[in-house]
Image 1 (cartoon, rainbow, N blue to C red):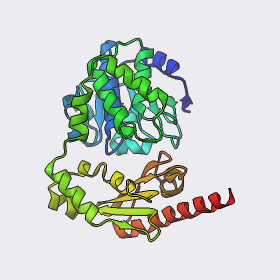
Image 2 (cartoon, rainbow, N blue to C red):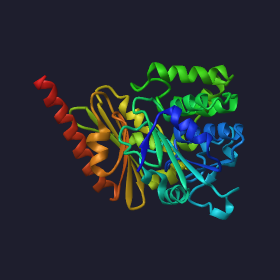
Image 3 (cartoon, rainbow, N blue to C red):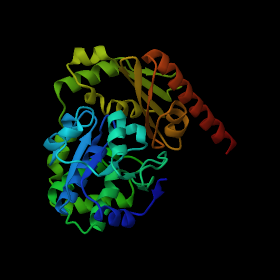
Image 4 (cartoon, rainbow, N blue to C red):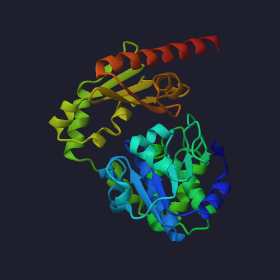
Length: 338
């Protein structure tokens, strides 16, 4: 049975083990990628053997991070292709085992020792030991603390990875999950000498032609409810082809919907063959993880969640939008009672 532990206990647990495979979630974002890369560098600094495996490999936008060129694709790598036989699996920023993907789950289960570190309140806890802090803005926050607890000097390379992990998951420190501890963790990265301006330019101020065209196509099909509180848009496979974009280019589109005046819940539907992936955003005190994602098998944070529905886009949209409208109605009723 999984045991919830402190950062200090996890650090001691890690010291006693070796031959690590660091695992992230499907559709890797900056937090899971940055955490895995930063943790891998820290373990290697301790003299441990470690390798990062991410579903689909390292996303193109994070390919410049230290160690990114050594990341293996969980879905393609065979046990024989690994540089060593892993004995310790460590899942980072993974809200539930299923988010590892089938290949990742198999790799995780094959290791005799298993641990997890996460910041999603919906996480049920898995592995032999796990750390969970649902108040953290990013799992990267926790990894900075873990590296300090391991008495490993936080290098510039580690700091770059973890700055990306933290800043991407709190919307460049604009989201409500940003807390004093978030800035303290970033300060540790800054002390290591990271190039904040350069990283910010690369991640947030540079957009490929394909990404820009996809944004335009998605926003052209924007829909808004009559009361202006619910907005949704679509990214279809045809749009990706027309824009010359790749799947990761849809990251951030949902934020444009949420930024419209009056919108309280934003929904981005992404066509993936016969199923549909949803990115959900909300304004507090609405909780899209609990009220929209969880009933359909998804999860995440109160104001930022996701779910994949095994239905074609329009059928899936009906279900998701119905739950979103119900959440808005319930919130309005609750406010009236208060």
